Image 1 (cartoon, one colour):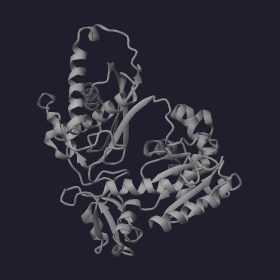
Image 2 (image 1 turned 180 degrees about the vertical axis):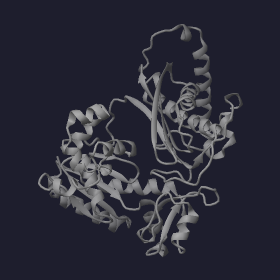
Image 3 (image 1 turned 135 degrees about the vertical axis):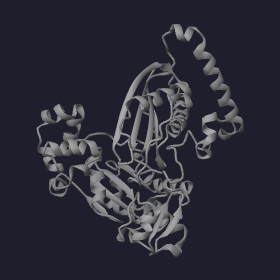
Image 4 (image 1 turned 30 degrees about the horizontal axis):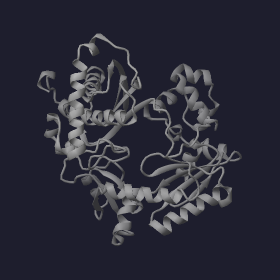
Length: 427
């Protein structure tokens, strides 16, 4: 296989400079709402990065590092538009394009030899993106997806890097294990306690030992480090069998109150239920909750539920998981809700379903859906949403739910805060 991984450099900030040429050469940061207490940096230009400005810096902190920093607001529709234009360029070379967020894609160019080898195709893409869209992209070329992703990170901005079967150990094995795709903070810490701090040491580690500590995921990471990943690049138009449907979001500010958590879980559950219906998956019997705290530590839990496709039941199950299992006592930065275990419309009758309780709720949600389809999503809202206008206006069927200040990407911790204890009966 010949796989490319393309990564648009400083994407939001670069789009801003393409829209406003007077910003070229100046330190620029795209930030969340600067009127909000937790307005933060979401993207920065190379000039801002040279001053030490980092993604996740509070605006005042970023300006202290770089007094001349120019703050630009989030223009997400424009970023989506540019992302699609870039993918149109990729499509000149292959139809096997798999998005990985708004600014990254994998491309399988194994059968695109008419355009040259992988490195030549990557170079043609890099030049076309720069000349036609005034954006820069770093492209990694390798023989699998994991190593292509690593290669694209090796040289930035505006570069092509090849990692092949002859040089991958030399180029990759000295990198921190945390650079490997899907090795998050918690996994990295577990590996560190095992004496594994580089990708090379992970590749050399005993697979059974890794499985004992990390379960099946240990064997998967071992294969990744050894260059044995054989996962295919899926076409954007390919519809694989759906095992789960979920959505997640990064919040524009730290969440300390249970009522805010519950509201966001309802927003996410609206998205999940809408996607389940669109895909014809029927009801789900498992709800999963993902939480990221302000220190970027991630947690995940799941619970069985009666088969359901109802927004309220999905949201309440996720909220119950949060109240029962989240004990970190740190503010929340990200949330995700996923449903799985679909019956695809073929269900086993139960006393609950026969009682009509479920059908009454389903008919109510169907009526709401029809009103929204005719008059717009925002015209009819749950009461819990109306306390936060931003929640009420989210597009629940979007690729990713976005609040101003919370768009695709990790955000560092903010200033300290305390959880506000609210009795469940008050919510």
